[in-house]
Length: 297
Image (tube, rainbow, N blue to C red; front, side, top):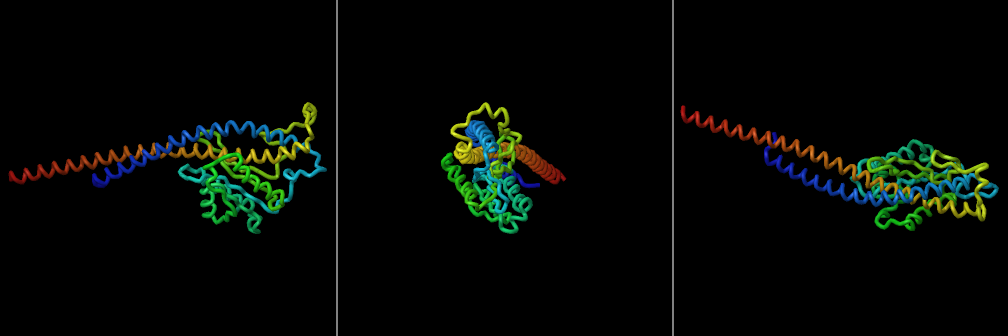
């Protein structure tokens, strides 16, 4: 059994760690509220814009090429992994790295073997995690969360859009954590380009007779030329906001569990300390009694 001094030292160490995790939990909770408000305000706008985009794109006359929605054969693929700059947030970053690794080595294995898959990482943890998996990160965006703004994110989005329109990439996917609530984050693999024109579960384009109730001015084609780039910037900005809210939620949950675990460990160590102390007292009593009996004899 460990001596009393070692146990006391360990109890003090665990208490110190518990104070740190508790403080981190409160900080993450405060940041989560702000991030949660941001994504909740952005999501309805982004979803409605996406609905308009899908409606316009699906009803376009394709005699005029839509450079963002035009479907090409997959020749070169780009995967964008969105992670955080800091850790201590459970499986938040590792899940993104794992999904990106699966896409690189399994889903697009045929392309990656021919050097036709590029990976861009947003966040330091994504860069480190992907490199440890043997994946080359061609470009990384670090410290973007320090001065986050739509303008800054739009510059990043512009790189992807230009890469697609210039023919460098034929297919772009984004991997990130979508915020559901403080305890739950859904890992999402989302097609960024080409723009989806088919209906999905969440987006149903307006067609047929219902479309006659809408007046498009100046024209669908001109609206598409303006709205598609704007929608792409909004969608990527929403993914970043989702990731930020998910990060704070994951960190708050992880620190809450760490604080609780520290409490359990402290109770166990205190019990161990009391048992060791009782054993020491018992041994001292036995030694005194034995000494007394020896003197009598």
